[in-house]
Image 1 (tube, rainbow, N blue to C red):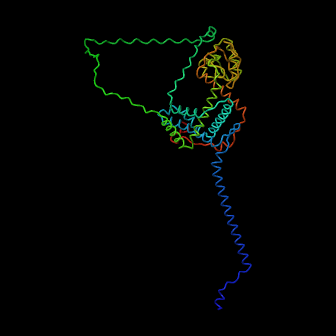
Image 2: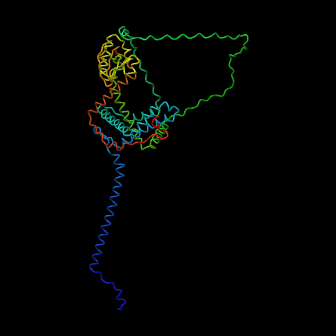
Length: 437
């Protein structure tokens, strides 16, 4: 073997070097493992963040009514749908030529949308009430079918496959009574002023018929040829047309936020269920009620009310004092006259006092949230209610029903709702009303 071959032969590795290499390999493996773990953790955190921001966020419970959960996704969609309704109403006013006449309503809508937390709270309260209604409906055996929902959608979109429904007959009111001699003695009647006489117009000259050129009117019409008028044939509104309009509506909504047909049908179902329960609760409220006719003088303190009573005892006219002293300016200008009203239309202390009086009797001071009232009863009888009075009574009965139902069921409103409430859709900048207007 030559010297050159001896020099090229590798020397065996020492134990120390082998140990160092093994240690370095272990360290590399540890570093690779740590890097893989870090990447995995970061990936998990990012994935959890996405999950938390979408799936888990939507699954959060914002309220619980008995065993019914209201999820964040349901809440958010409902808020956005109701916001969209506000925005569309606002922009329709703003784009019309009569926006100046709707400034007050538009400003109210704009303020409501800007205060998005309060808006969301109101919507959540509405959804809680709907869940309560659903619980009561189940107890009462009331339900809404798919057919009910379909018919309501057809009605909303003006599609009546069985013909346009017949209008409901107008309620025939009972004749109102005439005032008794006692009532006539109580009330100061202001005579209706007679119309002012108008000046007699100056006589106008009549043209001399002999000077006029007579116009001969041919009583026989000339049968001139005319084009045959072909009335336009209306396009039939078919079920396909109804479906097309419905889908266009959904497409329009989805340009703003995700909202499926199932979401819309669920919304309609809640409205129909509420309507059915409302009708069941209020069906026995009579159209005629014992009503009272009263007038009042409203003042700030009990001392002022007693002073009014003393002046009335001395013979001063109630109507005159109402016009002079009452802080209720809307009735004061009419001598304090509130007209006829039924139970449930006035605040409880006022109502109780008014119904306890005899015709002509004047009350002691009656305290309410508005101040102190001096009330005089002018009439009491069973009367037919107007549509608005009847509806007011039914609304009160239904509200009382809901409040009683809420007291009997466990309701939890979770704090998380405020973190998931949307603030869109919003009014387009070009339509917003500037502050101070």
